[in-house]
Image (cartoon, rainbow, N blue to C red; front, top):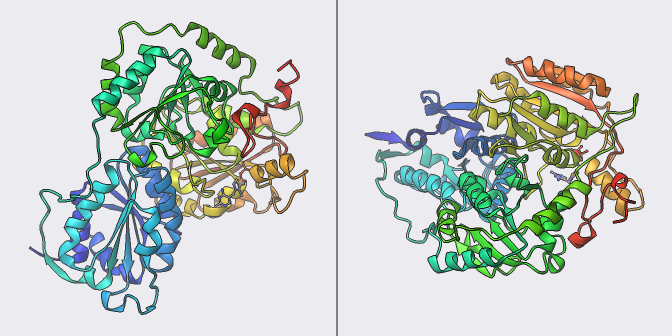
Length: 569
Ligand SMILES: Cc1ncc(C[n+]2csc(CCOP(=O)(O)OP(=O)(O)O)c2C)c(N)n1
């Protein structure tokens, strides 16, 4: 059967089981948009290509399937680069298709020409510039394979216009021939044995659970390891929910804004069982002072992570879903007695819990209170998305996570503007689950136009803006480390008028000025199911995120909130 390259591309996406793509057309990608009209694949028309990228990420994180974005050449390709970089550092499977100028014009500074494969080389797992229509089915199959296997990540297919208009004889590759790409999935038995021996000998072990566990879908295996051994678990920003926060072994988030117990448990540990985590600087603080007495077991599907930041005593390359059961098989039936260690940790938890001072009657709403009320008033399986800043940390700290894939966030890149489009993508993937985004006023302004997309496409997400009138996290650093010299961080809580803006974009807009109004607004928002909702929560400007390990400091120098200190620590 003869097909155009564009028809073959759309057909190949169908073969891969794609049900939704996010994108926006233009000159170089026009041929692809024509056969899309005849395809069962749903296309969500975004208002900015960065939004398409984050939507694909939100879709992928909520569903576990790769997200797909289609954009044109030049400025459209550069617009999506932020989202591609975001997906790369957070290991999100994503396939991006970009239009390109015709092959004969490449290199001539043609209209809307950029070197897309060159620009995205360092932020994709792999990319392809297709020069022959006959390659399209094979490249699409390879792209989905590479994006979803080993360490997941973004890939990009650059499609010149003459390649999408050219013809080929349709085929679908039965097997892929990628000799240079063979991800290791089974851990080395000798290494697993050594890991079991370290676990058996440890008296102060901690499981350092990272986002790789979520990507691998290894929540059962993790829980089995923790429960069998009684070893407490810290969950990084990307791993929140991999073990329920109300589980007796859960210590919450480690790192810069982690719980005191999680930070201290890692610092005092004699063994870190590192699973799909990468010793990010936001977790380790000053690396030379991090967990000084701990031996390290490091399991990761990506060999490049092992020894990158911290030497591993036992490095294991492999898929966590394979490695963890093997490890469990080698552990003795009787776990070591960790009673003393667990008691020490319990004391830290009890003395220094995550907490805040509730607002006085008549004074401003505390942002943490909004997060707590949202959790209390939404269904258990609600998907929570966040922007980047103080609100993100409060969301991670004060939401109670009970399952993976219900927390979607920009971790490694820290991309303001992530929340609204990622929420749209998550809701497109999981239409029956409620999707809330907690956003900052600064972050919201970066991609708010995707509320228009949500309205037009009837994707009813809900957005809680924690409006403190500032680029709050930067303000916090200026307050603490720059002598309260506030340079370019004031935004104003009233400009723009969020309620009118939301309504102009087809959403329901609400404003909440006082703590007593919080519940009613959330309940009203929960009832809206035919359009997006945006609530402008006016919150206390002066609130800071605690605990805090200042950048570059040792985790031992963790700063507790003022209301918890002065008790002899
Ligand atoms: C695209 C981008 N630009 C700049 C930054 C640096 N930055 C980190 S947090 C922050 C402030 C965020 O303000 P807001 O969204 O209002 O959230 P808040 O901290 O007030 O909760 C800034 C500017 C960033 N992370 N991303």
